[in-house]
Length: 209
Image (cartoon, rainbow, N blue to C red; front, side):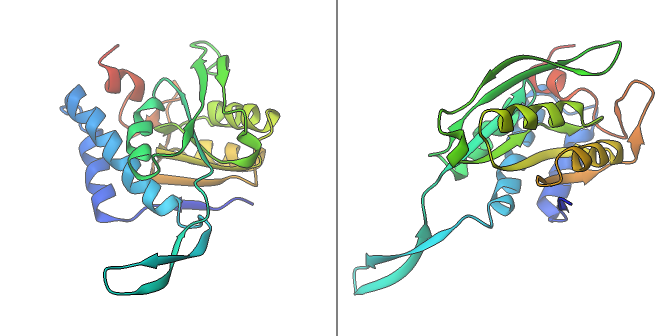
């Protein structure tokens, strides 16, 4: 079964609380998502492989650790997942970025895929599928299905807020995919929105309704 990591870092908790407020402006909401994504990426990449390298300081040569390649792919679920990209690229600027477009059917609440473009070498990369919210789990499951269908093997899912229902669905469908979240919320309401949540992340990032 996959592991679920719930961040307890004070900065992540503080910024997530600000993110939830209905009074947070679009500009501030967008900036907070970027900052939270950066902080989460710092921890989620802890298992990146290292190699020994020779470095010459101004005083002497020494053996140090550096990344053994940066074979990472950031795969946001459109449109809200785009809010993660800049914050993640700040730490891993050589990562490639793919895109999976989905929308939620207003009647069934099921995800509908309308676009998928991934790096050609996705099978060699550690893919981070990202979306601010994990509600029913449908979009996350289908997005990971799309990555696997195109050759992706090592995959991690990252979101800011998750409902218990979505975590359970994702773990059942993809027991090999670890889940990183900033906050685990109480439940879904009758419209499949997370409670207490923060509303529609895409609308709040881009100022739409």
